[in-house]
Image (cartoon, rainbow over all chains, first blue to last red; front, side):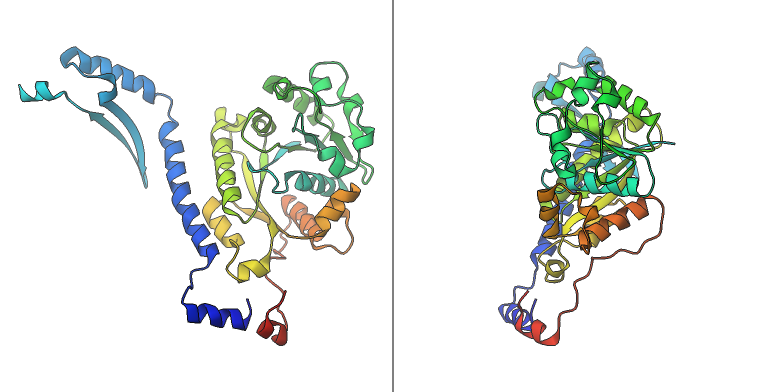
Length: 93
Length: 270
């Protein structure tokens, strides 16, 4: 980068270098992809989801896709998130 | 204790084969009995880079199928003693590289070699997986470019989750970051990710930086691993990598741009 280039950049005001943009983009996408990898890695999750579904089905009529089991990492902790959407009519009664 | 070292990257064209050739040559020059294996079945090229393409008679698939012995398939390197090449098959199917058979070959090689360098194909398919599965250590070759860094991260994820060491709960594969095709001038200009940036993103220890250089093409043209070139930054950078791999404390070189003179800086030009 020559003095003249520097000067031009300064005058134009576009100071954000592409290398900085590259680093930021990588940090964001990799954080996302790593989270995906870690969440999907425990192989007991599908089985856990099935068994929970069976238990819940004993009491309430729920659809297969109304129950979601997710493992998320928040810093030091891993959070097992269980999401069950109850059918509209059951909740009303 | 013999070591299995995979040279891997995910992305193609970043310098895996160039690195495998120079790294294995460097290990051999330092007295390690070394064998370098091409895992790119169907697209073999290590033989060309090592300059032994006309001496290939048998390949790794012949050995796997029990058609020849390992000894018959190994090619002695012409540049250094202590170094042998096991070529990939050019014609057969990648699926012939079954994991169990690869394991058997590696065990047999461990009886007579100190270092076994596995040159991985690009991608994360079967060939790449069989090259990395048995690794004790990994050289992750990365260019200062977004696609290469992302793919390296993916490979690191696979090493950490699916390699033999990971599956069997042993000590994890020792990972080393090797940044290749590095241009400190462009880094200084803010046009290229710096080594520090890449290391901060991938979070593995740096084993070396290979500068972008015209001599790499000249080396491959002549079938001489780049580490043998005279007066070349690339050769010296690879020698440093080997020294660090063997536990020596060598300061990083070729990471900062040479200071241009005052006039050159004022008027630009590179």
